[in-house]
Length: 173
Image (cartoon, rainbow, N blue to C red):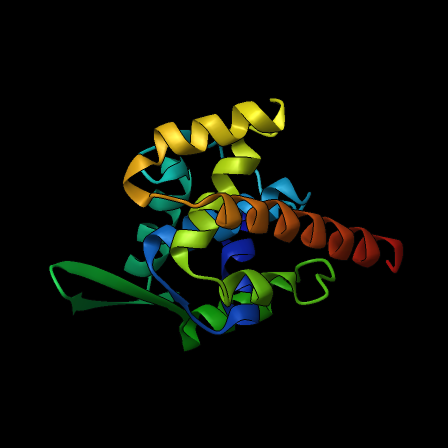
């Protein structure tokens, strides 16, 4: 049980800080799809794949002061910043848990916008469907985001690059 907590702490240790709940959800989901050892269950929600388990784990770790959660007002909404706290770093050190070699994949994901990660995670959520159907779902389910064909193509290219990077990291283990 605590190993799942350590995984989240290790992600925050590696990335330094993750800005936004949506970004955190999408980052973990995409990493899971790349065969990182995450086991949260996801369902499709307003902003794409969402895990209530992950949300509860983040809240729990915040209450334990293992992570810092800073709320910021951004225009008309709240934005959250997550980082590993000193107490969380101490706990992680005691656990001796380390994420498998990632070749910086988590950092690459963290550098992307939440909007783009929402698109990428949505494409991955429907990856078993033919590309034309996935694109139709993106246009229909994500109408408010108004993704262009160019952005959808970029998402597919990005996924391909991530898969290559993940395969390269796996081969070097």
